Image (tube, rainbow, N blue to C red; front, side, top):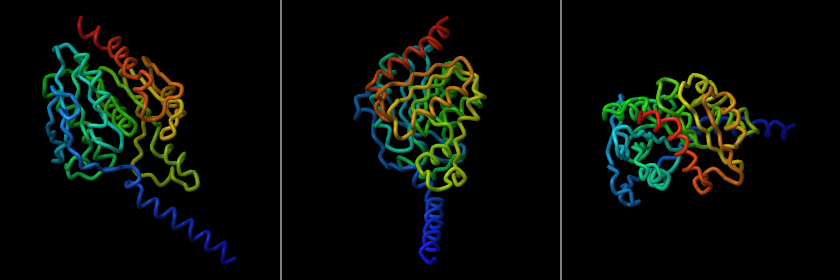
Length: 270
């Protein structure tokens, strides 16, 4: 009897600890402020972007090589810094596509605290910054990686932009949390929900999903479910043997470039 009571008490304590620590488990701050020149992106500019609530987001910017070229806004995952994504964006910079990479308010000395509402503000600030440079919404490609896919979907649901690319996306964070923490009622405890499954139905732009079949961080079943819920036009590439962080070793860059060319570049050049 005492053993059973102790077991129940221990389980309740575990649930309480996970509930209070959930944002520490979801967000992983990185204070690094890498310069693009450290990564061979000599033409990119490091800058700060102001949000509506006064946070100064750290970002890298490369203007499009020609006025009619697309502009890609990159939202990265929950950990690491912009330097970790340099090789990904190099492909687009070399193709003459404009690129804005932002890092979230809990990174690079911005001083902000993470939450879903706060990161939505960050995403909106990125789009507003691009608009202020004279880029039209129809030229914008919103690119979301992992956690950033939820912000990309939310932003595209609010705005009629050129296209959306989702790398290793999920349906909702509660769904993903329940998958990893199957032994607790994680789905009911999560505060930052990032409900892409609902928001994707509101997206009016072409959508592309690229996901690794061997992804253990965000299993591919979530990408498949999100793809099924997305309206047309849409396309998906579920890559055999690819994991969460090596999609670009399996040709993802060329898939994305082809998608952008078919859905934006030819239309913008007319």
